[in-house]
Image 1: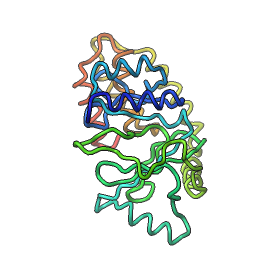
Image 2 (image 1 turned 180 degrees about the vertical axis):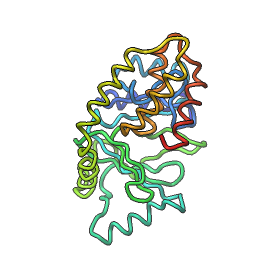
Image 3 (image 1 turned 30 degrees about the horizontal axis):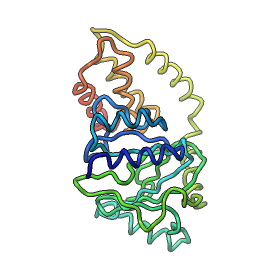
Length: 259
């Protein structure tokens, strides 16, 4: 990747009202001391400062603030083959239109971009090899393992089409399942927020963050959301903060055991 490649794209998107955020060089994760899509912005001075600090950073796009949805199709994995899932869905009259904006990922997968105004989700393997994203995504011209995300054809975000009805129906069905326990979760989540704001000090830092991460998984937060919030909570509500490596270790412990 050439210097400032993603800066140019980030400024272009910001001018059009899309919120962007920095990602680490050659990776999908935020750089050290950054918080992913939680710090996404249209402010050009802020965006410039990110790439002035490191001109080779990748670029992320926040989706929910622009009413976007990405259908992420993994065409590489043998165990979760998105191509086979697409063929199965097509047999039932469900297909993805090819006249919307599409990007090819470094591993040969595809990102279909659609307009969507529903709730924010990050659903992995909704069908084998197919994820539904409305929170954030990596976007071209970012590179992973030296291979770029690339637009398919000559389209851009101005060419996106509305999300197909069967995709929206799938998201609604998932939301209805969640709604069954929403009252109980609201009360629990309120207490959890109070605990976060109260913070902690020197003696209980590891225990406090360990319990907090576990509780975030318990209320249904997506893994990437929990990971990013863990660093935010450490920085804002733990005095003095833990080392970033310690935060990562605590998160990985919960992630490996499934929350």
